[in-house]
Image 1 (tube, helix red, strand yellow):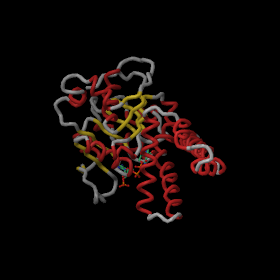
Image 2 (cartoon, protein in one colour; image 1 turned 180 degrees about the vertical axis):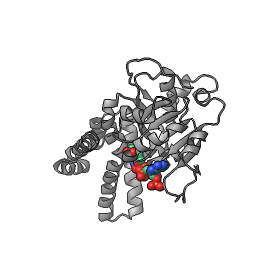
Image 3 (tube, protein in one colour; image 1 turned 135 degrees about the vertical axis):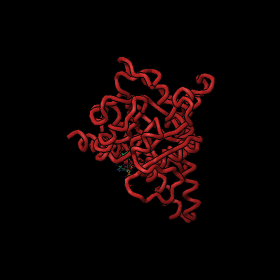
Image 4 (tube, protein in one colour; image 1 turned 60 degrees about the vertical axis):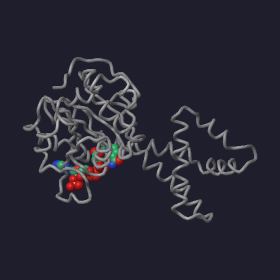
Length: 295
Ligand SMILES: NC(=O)c1ccc[n+]([C@@H]2O[C@H](COP(=O)([O-])OP(=O)(O)OC[C@H]3O[C@@H](n4cnc5c(N)ncnc54)[C@H](OP(=O)(O)O)[C@@H]3O)[C@@H](O)[C@H]2O)c1
């Protein structure tokens, strides 16, 4: 059973899979997490995000069980359980990935099937730990996780928030689980709306920019497939350089020679208020989250 203990300040940490592998005891953290059982995660509500998480963990050779409401289970290479009760019986770690409006009702309906050793990780935007705990009852470990669909490619950014009495061991175990999908950051729950906008919604915002790049290249004569490939690689390349520590201004200065062609493009972006528009998009997403779930 996972331990819960009394309060500790919530430390913030940035974690990569490598950080954990380097620090892992013999046999790895997953042996501690799952004991003798195979590395199994249950995804309750395997829709858009749930499927991305499932594929991410499958890439890591983990066993994924799942449920969804309808019987339409075509097109997925996922092992489906008959119902949520069977999912709980067969998994210790359950990711609650229904729509936020369904999360509380679904959790409450599971009470009779919950065991102390279960770990519930809710990815439902805007549904707080207090609401989730009330629905779930006193048993089991409960956390909130805010990953994104890039989990499918092992490139997720996941924010994790824990209850006040979560133990360091529990935190380490949850970090390790989500680190298998990309990077992990532990945050205070009050910051989760920001992470939902940045990490959860972020890939959707970036997709518009990539498409815009490609549109321009198509207009100038490039085939769309080639345009998308080049635009995507430009984003990946810039993102990698910045992930490695390069400042945005340094990156621009490396490319934009005075009176050159790149400054012309940058001037168009600035006059189109692209930066401010992106900032406003994040702001609007956070405001929507607050108004929708807290009113
Ligand atoms: N999509 C994202 O990129 C993203 C990012 C961050 C966080 N989130 C959060 O992730 C959650 C899921 O979002 P989504 O976009 O993946 O939604 P979605 O595609 O609608 O997936 C929700 C899934 O829950 C299933 N479901 C509903 N009631 C159920 C029940 N009683 N038992 C079992 N399964 C049930 C649905 O089944 P059917 O398919 O049969 O209807 C559906 O597959 C939300 O809470 C959202 O806030 C999503």
